[in-house]
Image (cartoon, rainbow over all chains, first blue to last red; front, side, top):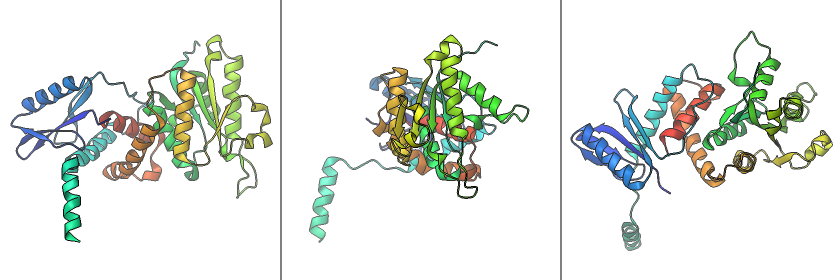
Length: 117
Length: 205
């Protein structure tokens, strides 16, 4: 089962909506990007949207039919900093990953490799 | 004072030294991934309360207990065994037996390195849920998941394979989280670790 989290973040060309391991779609405004993410979540039947601000904080978190993850009973004194650090690490991974090759392109790559030997 | 037995709270009674840290972290991760609250004596830093009082209060509140007896072997430096874990296991079992009526709902998992080693040092616990993790954190995750599913009677819980896959990913990213915070990975407190786990689980699924 694939990831159910849509990350929305500012990019060079506007606002990008992206899931881990998938290619992103870029919109000219944040509003359009969030609307597209909402549409995808509804279509999938469940999921969540994280809108990342430039300072590392989340601007928006929306969850649709997702099981809850409990906050710890006792709060860490540096909870806000940890939250920002986790956002940063996850977002960097999401931004840097590339779409896995489709079955067809993998097949082609294999053929090219064989030819080059 | 009335006590509320929390049906999603899991008391973790295990060694907190560096050698055991990977298994401790794996258990905390599994408990949060399953939608429960991981709790242990490290969550409190109230200097005015004795350590035993803190432990008693947490035990009283938790419906579930995971007790690891791995560290009963003789300590290399002192030549003596460590009795804290068996003591806290005894408190948990005693609370379930002699506590308030709702405390009879308490459920306990006992973990050890080997399945039957307990017979040599604490044979009276025969009949309890005793499982071995063989000092393997991923095996500990599977044991915790399977036991918690049965003990809590919650059927819609993620499987062990999924939890392990996500745990590996979390482990690979935790050093970067700590680096961002300028925190030493080995010095991460229980509260910090729990927060990092729950945040990471919520934002990456």
